[in-house]
Length: 90
Image (cartoon, rainbow, N blue to C red; front, side):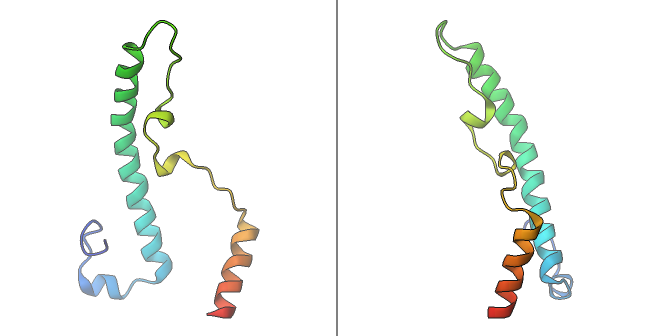
């Protein structure tokens, strides 16, 4: 992923911290999902325009689930505890 989608050169990749790399990957995923959301919205619109009279309209997230549809379920405190536990065991 780093050398492909993120277009990093090997020397750029090796000087990144793990946090920086993960932030770049998350940014890539969000940008990809936002582009996909445009297609999903158009598809959902066409689907809803052609639905039957007694058929409920679909929401875009019902038609095509994307990572950006999910909310964070873990608080910052919970994340810090988890990271501390991983750091102490690893």
